[in-house]
Amino acid sequence: MNSDLARLYDHLEWADKAMLAALGQAESHDEKAHKLIAHIISAEHIWLTRIQSQPIGQTTAWDNLTLPECQALSAQIISDYRTLIESTSEQHLNELVTYRNLQGIEFQTPLRDILLHVALHGAYHRGQIAASLRNSGLEPPSTDFILFSRHNNS
Image (cartoon, rainbow, N blue to C red; front, top):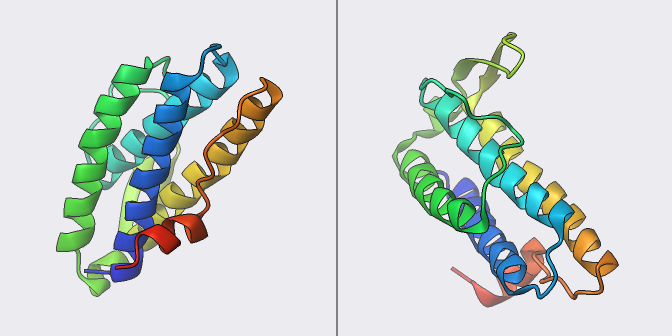
């Protein structure tokens, strides 16, 4: 098990939950922020299915998921990512995953790099959500890793 990756996914879960809760409590509906959280969750799902060599089906990177759908899908995929990370050896993290992007082009990427990409991708878009909420007059939760670390020292 890679403890650094496990820690990143603990943060991913914490940060996604914080944003989902903030969006659920927002008095005004921020369509851009909602679209971005759905994108984060959809992308996390897409990458997991690629890693597992499962068909993506009709899933797109910009699925129009409701907040309850985002919450349910997020809970399921974070559980699956935890299982993957806990059961994967250091050597296996360096093995190539063969997958097709949404345009059908085939790529090969080390599993470790995909897992890092998923964690970083969410962080990027959570920043965009925070900016969108601020522009709507709302105060977004801070989801910086250092804040997570201060409250979750393990």
